[in-house]
Length: 524
Image: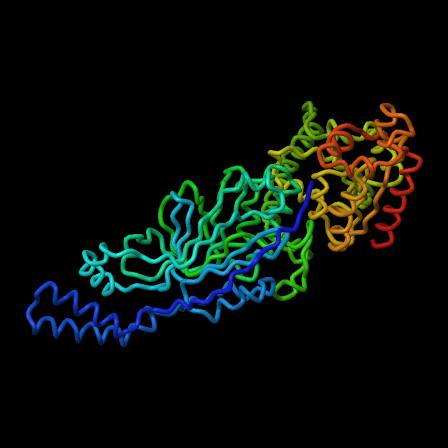
């Protein structure tokens, strides 16, 4: 993948967005009332009532009282942190990151999905009295135009250096307008009392690595400091994505998710974050997080997300085993044929054995002698479970297995993202095919160490790769993989990711398994 750092020239904001001067408002309102040719006494009474109302209501009309600020996160740059000291109706964007842009909107934020736009006005509250005044002045206001103070464009996804990927992301218009009674024409259908986070689930969604790396983890980084008092507004929405990750989202937000494209109602918020912040591959920089949150804290959130469902699965299994036990007792008592579940009984000794989970693959980068690997692991002393997850496999079921496993083995690929489901202190063995050493360490090895796993990287020999049968030993594909991978992502993908399988040298690989076994036994 070609990566580039886009230079950004920030515009200096020279204009302060202030609320209407009271004297101007009074003069303007008197003019409009007189235009209606009301009796002087009635006009005087109306003027007095209006003046008093402004005195008592002005703190609510012209200042935000939202208790949740998006600006508490230490991750935000100094330019964004200035928003808290400015008037409402502002948009401040940080485009300095190589990976993503992020904008903050503060004030009366309103969605308009038909035009892929989000508007922000200065005021955040309007009373019924002001609505009454607005109806009086509507005829006059319709003759005037509302000044557009600021217009930003953003694609809320975390791979901004990849043009082909970003072309699949909906672009949002962020527009700040001068507060005006004409904004009442853009009325709120749903008023929210908490901020919003806008992001896209397009791009590489569908790839397990990217779903976590580009979406779930950045969402945690961006929103966790708001303590679930946040509404997620999703562009390029997928029902299956929400079903798959709903357990995690429910830990980050107390509110229902909004489908920006399909929900055409005007949703109003006191503040909004547009875009997500990302640190590095499958990791969190705790120095940039409120409360020094780390990847271990994210792992704890996964526990909270999946444990209720896991407990439910356990209860279901216990009920099933109770039925099987009853049938077995009936067999011994009445000689009734019994077949269900007889082969799944385990001895007490087996339950205490270190557990090993193998993430199995089909097709490219699969382990061709996987069955012999399983037999060898059992002889060493492991209780082995082979996982073959599908796209439709419930994540709670995978999490349950890996969360209770001592060791996980797998060949480099998106499925290695499952190391996030392992407990700190467990062992992660990554089998590294030819030509994937850098990616294996960058995307999975280094992040696994940050989570507190014991990481073992097993780089296969040329004789353990199916490429050995396709190329001569002096061919760059085998002799100098770096030279080949430098030709670009498509070449790398075709040859090393899609074009090879693995046949482990079991004698050589046995050393890694024994090392993992001894490590786990020493910790028991």
